[in-house]
Length: 194
Image (cartoon, rainbow, N blue to C red; front, side):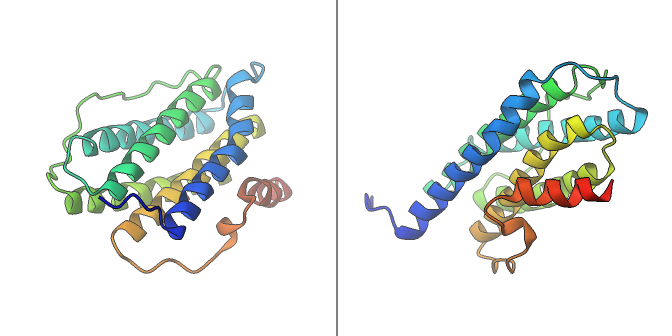
């Protein structure tokens, strides 16, 4: 067992910790925000989608931890599971006045019994979740619900990139979501459009 932490691993860990530190205030605000207006039908549909996606991801990463995984993949699965659990708590806080009925199925069948199968499923699910969260932040009507969804979008994009790297796929070219302060950048873009 190699006890030496490589520079790349250290930087990734520090980057994940930095992302969590950047997004923590937004999550805390969502969880303690004053009760607002009831959600519009469109916002309820968006929140329902976001809940369903998060429950699928929690189930995927919970299942992954029952598999025999390389240490790096297992560390990612544990970190992603923790973040998706935070997403669920955040969505519950955002949902206080939305009256969203969630399809919380407790049984999901992923089929994979090895690391490669898990990573391929994670790639499909994280890419779909990132695309869905990206659409959600552009369509949400209640601006008080926007910031928590931006946090989730940021995490989904990071998870999709991490899965691609774990699969050995080439890294995507740097884009606007690689900004060290993505929430500020996205908030500025989205609020200027309204």
